[in-house]
Image: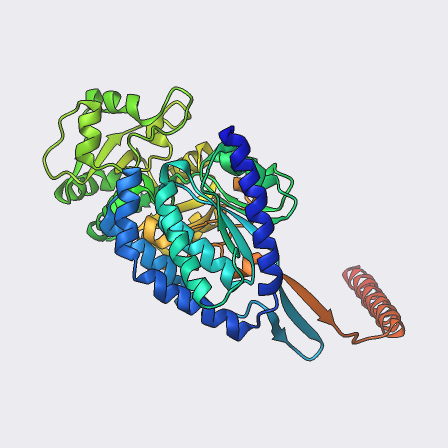
Length: 480
């Protein structure tokens, strides 16, 4: 039988089963749900290393050592943040207002190949904590490690007596199956993490969606910054899992007066500046002819990338940097590069740097993330007021700060870009984004009270106006 037809039928079967299981699961109280979530966290944490290695072996993206950290962060790190969060039943009660958390139903979880196991863990725990079911749609290039992750979770859920099928997965992933899943009438909300086309498809599916498109975070090193630490944080971020986290830095912007010091520090910490010929060679490999990122560079080391582009890079170089002066769709250095590659811009002052940051974000990644390294709170404030980014990270690595590992942001592998970025929210997505809140509100005044208050306000306003007129007349008479 046709693979697409098989995959479409599987979607229908898996969604149906998840919906039936979720009807039962929606009856669980907060205490029961919290025990289940803890049990899943403890179980999946045992396999962090194994799943990390499987992800790298299958996709060829990133570093398994760093994927262990991401798996643990998606389980234990997330749990610490949500463990006391009220999500079902009465979640807030005041004298005249009660709020009740209501699960949405079945979630469609679209999983990318860049962070396959960690995102599967994260979205599954979000669904369980919020009383929802979820159907996982794996990226075809990461299918096996995603299926293995779901198997571990489901095996533990079965031991706990949770209704079978609550967490479903499509093991025949096709474009047709993903489209069928997103458009299915029984999908309550779509959690879409992936490319721009995937996110757009989620928002045009006819179902509610929370989608995250590409990042393209610029990092401004302002002259008051601790330059040594700023460079350290940027390189730590850009080399973490070989740069596959979408919140990682994509360009560095500096002021002319601090350029030499920043360049010296970057080279000291083993960043390599390409010459123009090398930049032009590498440029051919960053983007494909259709304008999308070349998967051959994604999550690869500097050594692998330089071999691909046939350029000579010093042994031990951690990051490749290209000096740039332009921003545009035709300049791949000014776009998202999920690899240890950075653009480098020099501006006359912080105001020009501010404009360059806006230009970079508007070119790609608007609404996502940016970084600023500075000790000048006035300039930081100015950046926060003007920049079209949902996460403005100060003195921290972008990749880890954006997901909440080194900041006070909520731990998340789905980062909303807000309306400016075509997203329905600017939040780091938590279980609270996956519940409806039913509000019970008691009356606290009668119509007569509203009318009386309105009349009183009009009379008071009239008195004030009359007093102002009398005062004005008296002043004019005195002047005469």
